[in-house]
Length: 149
Image (cartoon, rainbow, N blue to C red; front, side, top):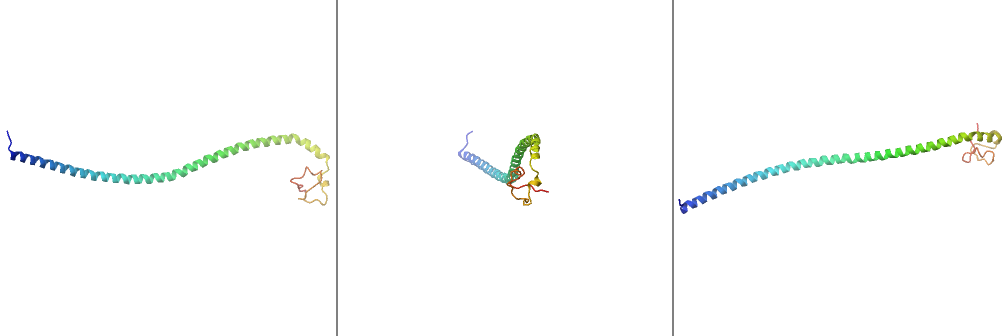
């Protein structure tokens, strides 16, 4: 079956018309798709803005919290070190007290032989004055004698 030129031309026109309609339909669908994608992207951008704000808020809370916890740990470490130093110092003080308790009978016997404190102070002696007597040298505290009652 041989087609004539007019029939062939008519068939080509119809196929062109169908292709043109299909291309136009595809263009409309692509435009609709593009609009949907742009809507979705705007929604995603809005969500990202909220996520950025929430992240900024959490960072604003987290950084001071981290600094506070670091400071607390540092201070606790300092307190622990100071407690250990105090424990060592108290051990030294205890040993000095024990040594002083052992030496106290010897000190009491040396003071018994010296003159008594009221006799050593004359009427010229006043509280806060410096003594130059050798007998009161053991009683001087920072260059001053202790007050008498």
